[in-house]
Amino acid sequence: MLKSVTKVPQNVANLQMKIKLPEKFKGTIIEKWTNYWKNLFIDYRQMLKDLRTDIQEEPKKALIWTTGLATTIALCRNNPDELDYRNQIKKITNEVILVSEECRNVNSLEHLNYVQRCYNEGVIHYANLGIFSFMYTTDLNDSCDLFKNQCSYLKPSYLSLYSRIVDVGFIGKWWNLHIKTTNYDVNI
Image (cartoon, rainbow, N blue to C red; front, side, top):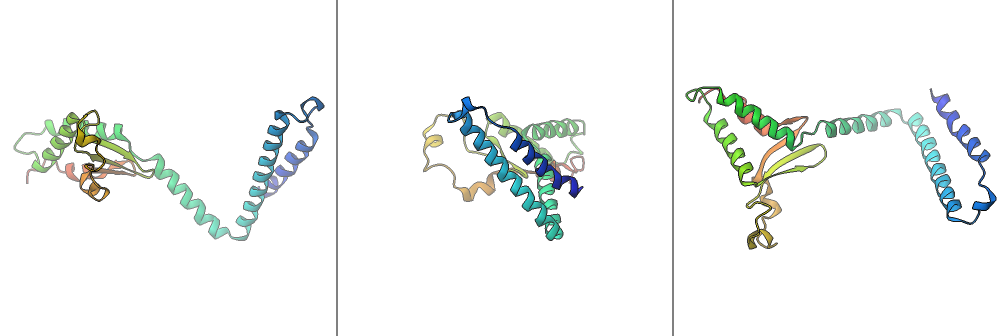
């Protein structure tokens, strides 16, 4: 496989030498653009050659980097979004409704009511940080036009953000919701 990879840059370089720009485009913006793309291609070709030699010289390091990159990509693809959160809330709420009131877990019911109240007031928000997500609350709705919502001095500090986090999404699951509603049918 490495032999076929080593032949590709030579074949492309030969193809690049065969392609010539007509005389009528000399000195125009088209020539500048073609030179730009040729130089960009040459840079990337050299980078791939260097990468191939680095992989051959240090295969363990390459394996670690590849594993880390693949893990990060997998975590980003499995990062839940706000729609997943809403669907999970609806699903669990429907399951809790089917359980009699004597058997319902009070903590699960309070958490679900709190999240529903936040959605009704419009104070719950979603933040995506790549490999994990947050659902957090604010004091006022975004459409609220009060002075408190517009003044930068009255906005909450970043240190109080921890207390405003409602849920954390990671590996395709909303963890706080999962923990608080696992035993929704066991009254404690």
